[in-house]
Image (cartoon, rainbow, N blue to C red; front, side, top):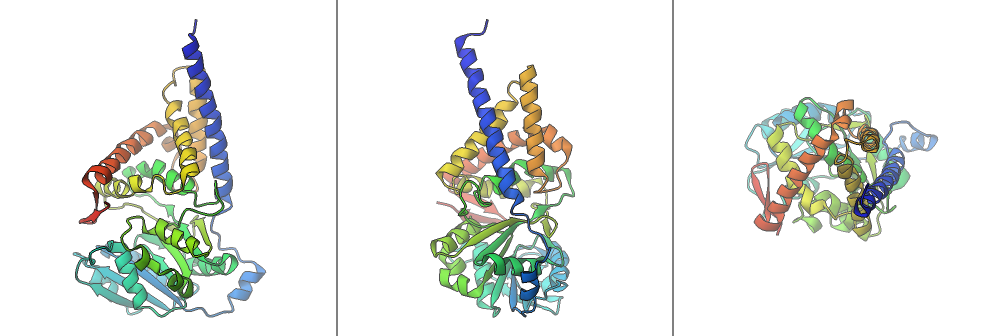
Length: 373
């Protein structure tokens, strides 16, 4: 006979599981409404008669390989940028030479480390802004891979929604270790409170692709106002919201893709360790509690898989993870089926991130130590 304690434990598992399913369905529903498409409406056609001056600003530290792929894609956009500015952030590779080889590109070369109080990416973007003159600003990470309609899509969505538009790119893989990004991608996209659930007002913005009017950027103070933050994308979005300027976030679909950490497993581990702990509660208390229940549903589902109802829960969670992961990247059926491996790795990175931020009070990225005290 089962003890009362065992029965109570089973009941709690079912409650967590059912709540996990409901939260997951809400995540999926709201994400579907925020997929970036290039399809045009009649109002879009009207806006395309304008000739907007759009400055594309690309912060680049040791990005010679990515720039050689990205710059031709930016140059050949259907809606041509007014100017393309690459900010070489004191690189030690051929970033400057690659950027300078494109006559359409203006290169700003920073030959010293950021001033005290500045994080590197914000410092690079700020210098790009200071040397730009467009009425719109598009900040692109060097590792993104835009379709030729990206700028047009961003401009039209900005006309439709106003304020700041940001996009989380669809993740493309070339190496097997990149599949380990699955739980991180799901948390970044769904649990960040950036896609309209649980709060219609997002927690911030997605960093790889940000589009804004120059006027709004200057009203908020831009990256100078958040110069010391590792989570510059979240903080920039909050900055806009605090100034009463709308922020709308999208999933990149096939309009923009990227390889998140193409340089190897070490880069992936270092990159997620840099952001995980500081970003854990950035969505607010309610969003954090929902994400905790969501994660509890996942972890509890593979602790009792050797019973019939445990198998049902396991396969249900695997199916939900597959549905959630597909819009975010090129994940396969085996990623979902063997999701415990992904989520064990997730825990390892999370505890490493806690150690770095709480005890060492610094994280590491691209050869730099970043103070997070």
